[in-house]
Figure (cartoon, rainbow, N blue to C red):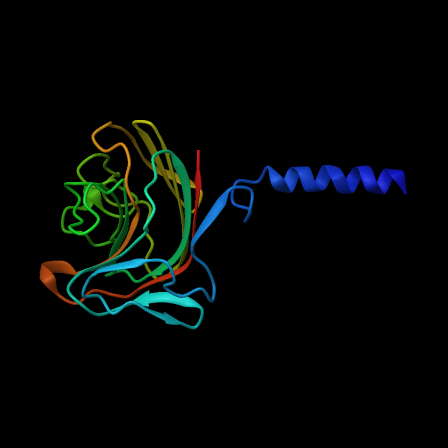
Length: 201
């Protein structure tokens, strides 16, 4: 009996040390069934809750923005994209109403971006990915892990590091999830968010 109790305690401790476990300081941005609760909409994308997911597939450009600001953190997001989906996660926004890759860090989701060096897994304008793209998101479920510590930001897609940046231009700000236009302004594919969680460091 005592041996079982010790093993159960050790197992619980191991699970508590797992970074992507819910609880243990993790805040939910999006979760199954939660919908858009607590997020601000910017732009004209048709964000909606659908089948337990948060989805957008029409509009010129739109964002879901956290009301809270973050400095150092780990963010884990599960998402579905098509090959022609233009989306991304913008971190440390300087302006939560006018969101661009010039006033925040954009971790990109766009397999067919016209300038591929800032395609899926890149940090637009700051950290490139190899060309041709070796990490793509289209047609499947994916997991992004973004770690921001001071000036260093590391991006992983499905467990593989895609880009690393050392830049102190933007120190703190909200997080935004994007639905963007396709190539040459055409309607791009949908973006579907299943789970987005963040833990301050």
